[in-house]
Amino acid sequence: MNGLIFVVGCLVGYAIYRHSKNSQPGLETKGDPVAAIGTVLVVVTLLAFLFGAGNGPSAPENGSEPSAPPASSAPASR
Image (cartoon, rainbow, N blue to C red; front, side, top):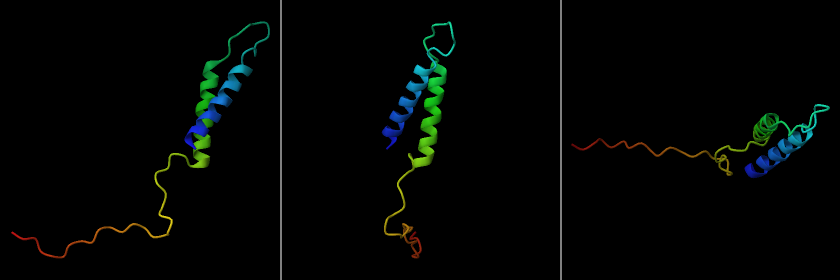
């Protein structure tokens, strides 16, 4: 899932880069890499937030929470 989010972000960034290539009339520009990289970062962040990518392991599926090990009630030996 994380790879797909990254690929989508890169595609959107590439589209922004290509769109900004001739944004100023009369000037032949290469494109705006800062806008493209910024767009990639924003898109990846938003998609990761929306889809919950990067969360650790989810809760157990049987609904029970993991229990702590039982505490020993025996006195320590000297």
